[in-house]
Length: 516
Image (cartoon, rainbow, N blue to C red; front, side, top):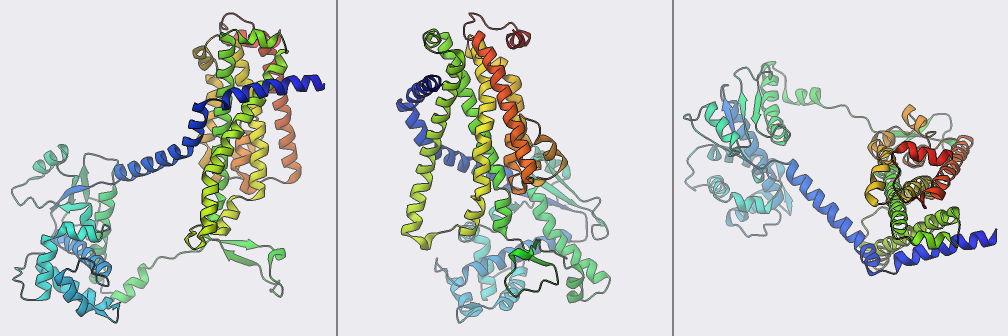
């Protein structure tokens, strides 16, 4: 037995040294975290930029002036937002803002009622009254209309940073606007029916890109404010009463507190609950992140095993190895060697990311932006232990299957074809990651925990609600049994497949290798 283990360890050591002794391994290991972060930033920026529209829109007003009122509401919010954001610190030293600063800021505090009143007095000059510059309202209106880009630079969150209304004039028909939408001169155009106050069933937004609804949602928000005020006025309800009637009812998410967790002296006569924090909600999804990492490591390690096996077989190196070890030792040694390689990569990545972060927080604790409670919730011992257990079982289970496929194939292309069913099985847990995280004790999760190809991933994804200890041990034993079965099947294929000169003619021949 010691000689048997020594042979396996020698093969594992050889595979590990062969991997880590190359420059490309260390370049890839060191650049991996950097490339991953850069890729995440690029994807994030691309997602935001492609999901949000930017450009001009038009409005066809078939109502009695609702378009103008909605336009006023847009100006009202933009100007109010701009003034509140810039009055206290007029970094650009704009003359008209300095005047307003003296008028609307008292003792370093913005007078919000005065700002609102000022905005109402400015609106007529924005909407068409001729501004001569005689009053501060007129001077601000002139500055606002002539310095839109400066306003956006100072306050990027303004609506005019993304959406500008196109005012075509009466000579533009709906057909003309459709042409502008089709050639992407316009994002789209809105049609306000004459009965919009009574019903919005005929209101529409016409656009070419039907997947981008951000501009429609943005404009609807302002239209709703205008229409809601008209409806309130129509039924003769006071504004304060209307706001109270339309106030949303909200419920805070709470969780039950067990008696063991109560402080001394707490009343045990009533059930006790406490509000769920954002950190707890974030930590609840941590197992899904663990599951993705587990899946990535299992998939990457299994593919490395398969391609390494195919390469050694195609170069006839396997004949030399089998002259000094049996097929089972070679298979176990290669799996152990790839495991050591993966652990080396994990160690490099962890040191590369965690060490500088920890040293930085230790040296400059005032710059810590992470709540220690969130960190401790994400790295709960139960999560970490569960991850280690099922990473080992998942990798061994799939590693043996991919090794078997590689041993029976003469080229990497053949191996990719024959491993397709296993790869498809591996993709399913990623597709089910969100529904399983949302319902860790549901019927789907309960069933898949006992389905061996998915057991490691589901048990990690649902780690926030682990089953009772007897059930957990039963699932563990069941997975161990199937892992042993995976090795038994792989060993039978490996023993015959490594010496085969040609690829299997089909899946039936692979099955025959197991039976014979």
